[in-house]
Length: 300
Image 1 (cartoon, rainbow, N blue to C red):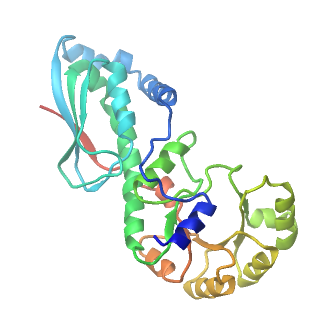
Image 2: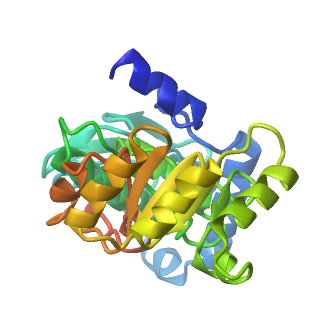
Image 3: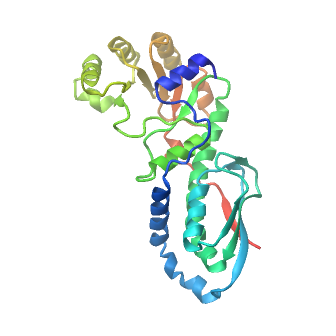
């Protein structure tokens, strides 16, 4: 990444992390996993209690059944540890690692009851987040060399946003705003409230937003793009535009703002969109439509 590009990303809070940092504190991790185990009523696993003696020990491993990028392993470890504090865990591949089919990811040894009762909760977390990381990695690979960046959106599962956005980072993507307080994003419904006056909407946002907050305007037409440039928007979202319109919009902006393509973007179209010269490509599907990565817990 060039120094200029790195500084641009830094100005918008979008520099990639040197190391992938898990987003939850230990207290938060304990709480969310405990809630998931309670939801599954793992303390009353009647199947395991009926078939497995309390002193039975076992060894097992989590295995990737398909190629993908891992994310969420700390959640899986926490699930096993809460039901089996003496469990021994060895991580073979960390979050952010690309794995091939049949790759062992995590080895475990401990009381069989605890391992069996925690299995589904542990895998649910890892499969969900690894699915997001894997889809993100595919989008990132599809636009390699274009200079564009893949971003997520706020289309996340309620209460799981930090984890799902973490999974996007594990797959090589970048995070758009984390919440409504992180940036101003003036969309079509906001513009409707000011009779379509882009300049008025931006000026009001400048007057009320905290210092340093970036202002983005969603534009459906080239006319709106011109208005957003004139109003001094920091970021211009080019929503559901055709390739020809995207190229023209990028020329109009001419580096005066960051350009972001959005709306209905797929793996089949993302490369063509990146080649128009846009800076960012935001993809809601990363978090709302990613299929779970196929992983399994195999007992020796």
